[in-house]
Image 1: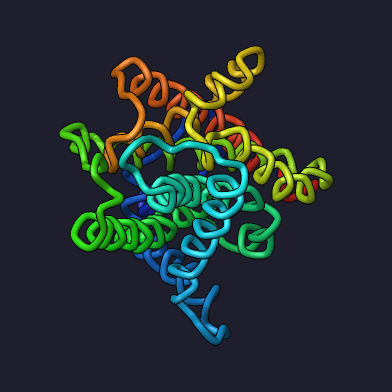
Image 2: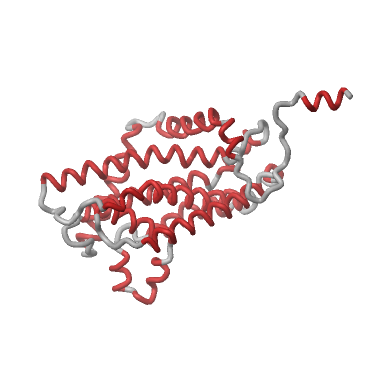
Length: 292
């Protein structure tokens, strides 16, 4: 009788997850304060002991765009499209790429980086990689603002941006950002789960992200790659991040082409990869503490 009464007094019951795909929004909402604290931690601690602080949000994309413009457009003479400045072209590609890559690298070591916390207290584990995606969203917003500022400069103070203009499909930009986040989150959860057993993957993540950037049409248009290397173009063309970056450039600058098929392709692949990552993540969290 006392046992039955005691069981009725519990507010919540913590039990192992039995579902493969288990994203308990109700439980995540209950821990929303913890999610906010993680987001705040990710933003503050990274730049707390730096000299320039949040200015790195501006410096990194600007300097990268300058280097890409000098090397790939000035030296290698890679075209970007008539009436579209090479600097704006590269800045748009880097802005979209940075959000994906930071989500990927930030979530790829979730279990290893939080093993001390995970082993002592309970909370929905998926909150940790979700906090990385949300905190990087702020960085993406700042870098997107930088893109807007330089776009205004080129349009009103130079004559180099004759054909650069946002398109009406820019209304779909929030969905494209969602695709980037889901893609990075899904791939990051898969890598995080694998690194609990295969530590070598930790060293390969940063190297692999750099290689993936060159295969994602960040510093060149897809049409140029298809013209110069048609036999290898399928490798870049079927890369979901290539599609997302091309769509982002078209939405913001009007360069390239847009098709709803490509938009749906990017969305479907991102959702599938996210669900796959969630399945592997939920399976790993049951026993990761024994292998980490």
